[in-house]
Image (cartoon, rainbow, N blue to C red; front, side):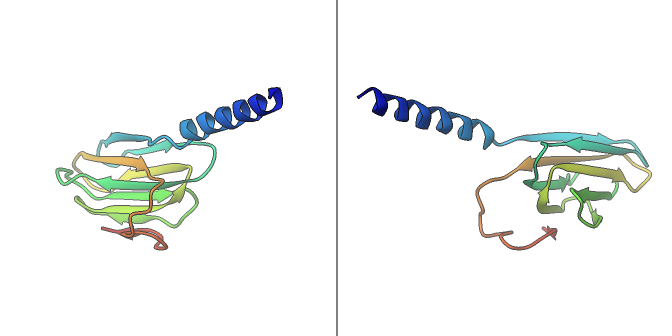
Length: 117
């Protein structure tokens, strides 16, 4: 009986840890003209989605993790694996964006790297 309680305790503890690790993370950022910001998400790569807001006045150059850079026009998004985001305002007006981690594939971007929406 003591052994069963120990096994259940370990399983319960691992379950709590896994739930905490899988938590959805998100944030917003703003960039002055020609400004660059680095956003560090975690020490390990995660599925990331980054968007340039519709109200942005400029395109944002983005590098997710170690992938090639892409350009996000206002209103567009990209998905890929990475542990950090490097975002650069490419224009002369302020730009704003959002980012989030995602652990539930929704079929929209499964298997597609840096697909813009």
